[in-house]
Amino acid sequence: MGKRDDILKMPDRSRKLVSPRTGTSSRLFFIIPAGLAILIILTGCASTTTKPSPVMKTIKTPSPKTKQMNVIRDQVVDYFLEIALGAEYGISDYTIKKWHSDIFIEIQGKPTPEDLKTLYQVVNELNQLVEGAIQLHIVEKGGNVEVFFIPHSQFYQYEPPGLVFYGGFFWNWWDGNGVIHRGRVVIASDNISQKLRSHLIREELTQVLGLMNDSMKYPDSIFYQGYSEIHTFSELDKAIIRLLYSEPITVGMTYEQLQKFYSRAMPRGTH
Image (cartoon, rainbow, N blue to C red; front, side, top):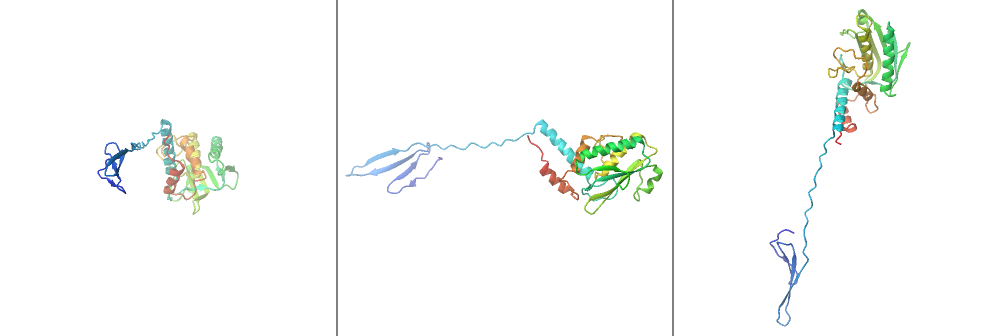
């Protein structure tokens, strides 16, 4: 016990004293038989007060592996927000757009054998990445996505008003909820190399899925805005394609809603 300067009053001529040094307590009894006063002091047992040990908070320092995973997570989230919201050209609201039904690709024009090989390869890879959410098919007629292989001189027939393209482009149509229901891809059949044409087939067809923006961040990405002849998906490309067609990502989601989703579903690690 701590120091006490007061003396507590006890009933019936009994008082409790508290020692300021040891914390011991003593009781004094006054007995007066026949005029003789006898003082008896009974000393109680000493008691000690133990202060609780302070609680030390452990600050967890992320391991190198966790730090790396956090970096990858942040890259995927940031890149997805950049590529999946808005569009490379034209006016667009910044919400998620995606297909709810299968994509049927109808080929028109004069593709080279290498064009067809690339197209089938990209379709197979995208089917694996969307993991059954939708399926892409190549059909002879009745497609909801038309892929044109035509010379530049015919681009004007399919270009949106006020826009002029070189090499290739895509265009999507969606409803008021953000569900894409029609798409178009145009690839030049003249004045560009086969390597560039193969790149454009991969890029434009992938963007038809709903990843409609470009970026200058990663030169190895199929969405790179600068000149590129990349003909494979980077690991980051694969991650954002999977993410777009994962079940929690729904049409119409805004930037703020996506940020809240990521903070809950993909928290940063500390171990």
